[in-house]
Image (tube, rainbow, N blue to C red):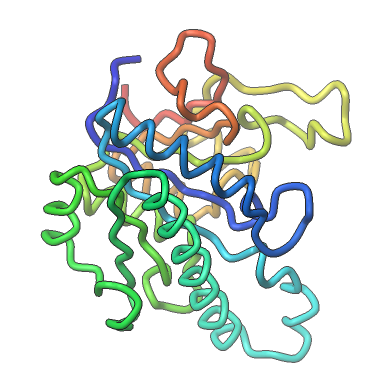
Length: 236
């Protein structure tokens, strides 16, 4: 793989919790920030990050019994702002400028997302952290990540996970789980592998955006021949 100019990294909030299972593991956050800085500052790749909320609110099924979906979605969007601020602080402490850009107008904390302004930040080698999804309920961080990747002309999108790709079943539970090296977007939709939500995959398919699913620990070696991932192919 040739080194890309600009990529979007979709980061799970659950990953920020690491082994403690909730909240933010500060040691892991610092390690993650170092990897982002390496990609941005030393590998000279423009980085967009979209972050999830799962480490802060892990009670989706329980909440659904007593709270409206749209209310819960707005709460989870606010949680992404907290995660984004933590990541912002960690990356800047490791030597790279960051701009948080929010779909919600919250000027004391973040810039409002404007495409052309975000591109200007990227061209100045600032990391752009996008939070608050699209500020629309019933959409997810997956859909927001694909949308931002398309809006900002990213070469491709990378979904950071705890495993080194997409499997036919949970590799933590089944020793015979098979990892896919490549999948077409049609296969990803048909197999219902829950890599991303279906609307996000469909949008990637319609707009020819390739998606890579890979392990978060080794993201700084993304173009190495030894690097393991699953490529979801929308275009050659």
